Image (cartoon, rainbow over all chains, first blue to last red; front, top):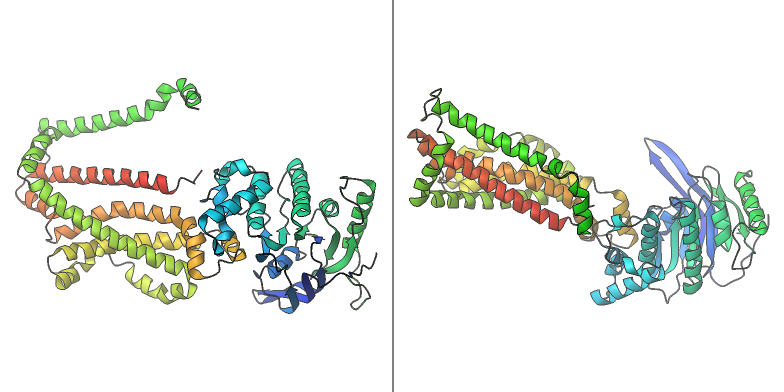
Length: 265
Length: 263
């Protein structure tokens, strides 16, 4: 595996020695341990690994929805952004009592924006995900893919510096998933957001990301980090992408490295 | 799309109306049976007035102004008792649903007070409020309180934690923010189930409260029955059924508006 050194300026996300354990019925479970990760501004990083390896927990820690038991997490968001982060969950988690537009405007209600501005912003975000004409629908009237687009619009509407995505496309059928992947790549190109994307789908990770981090083990730790050196636009299922996917697969099932080994993410 | 609906209903029109037809037939049979029991002399008509005697009894009661007087009094008790009881019950249910420590604090108090029937409070109601409107309102609101309390508590408790997490993720982390952004809207269907039950329960409490002497439908019924004017008693029984029907229909209409997001 390649050791990758980032030379850019200060990372937008800096995680060092992150550990998280929780206690249940008197038994202590270590979910994450000694996890190091730096994400550069504007980078699209995918985190892959089997279920239960702590991928989602990592995002929850970043979002301050879970408290780490050890290590440091530093976020240095783009000062031009209005919020440091916004999250898209695995299931869209739209609020069923709000119409689509009001769902997209949800996060904006935390800001000082007036109602007209909020709705205007929500409309723009909805247009960005291609659902402008669905503004007046109820969530239950949408397909799974449309719901996930609305959730993406809700996250984009607050103009975050970093977009955290927790297996957002895993519950969708193949066609919908692939079209949403292309949408996300386009939106990322247009908005320049930093994206941290968790998935168990290696092909998805390799197709979209600039860098793929393989998590494995119990507790979960970084096994490998690979730069996807394939120019965009990428061709789905190309030989090079498939090769990298195979390598990532091998990373995940590899033996744990000795601690202190000389690799930098 | 109305043509589509008309089309799809067309073939099943008789089937569509069949439940209504059956219901009407059942009611007619019931009235016929009721009418025949006193008519055939199986029971004295002073013990069971036939339905045919009721319109006249109603008109008598209505023309003398008694009907409107007593219905007005009872409606007043009903509305106040319902609002106070379901309002406080919902408030407490929401608060204990949101705060574990408050729930623990009140757990044994609830267990202690919950089993006491609202009518058992009647002696205290008389001592505290006298034979007065406040007495009836008190008894009615106790009866309604617990229904609203448990419904609201359960509804808040069963709100999808994932949605609360969404509120957290977008920065709505204070109690009031969580309450108004997620918990309350999500719990509204459950809270309304309690409110609807309370709407019916409050009528039972009205009669019970007024039997203890506070002026209203209940006291008028007791008066009439002591004079063996059973037709008047039945007039008020049906009055209550009608009032409840109207209120329930009004409630269902309002609920439909409030929950129009429900699939």
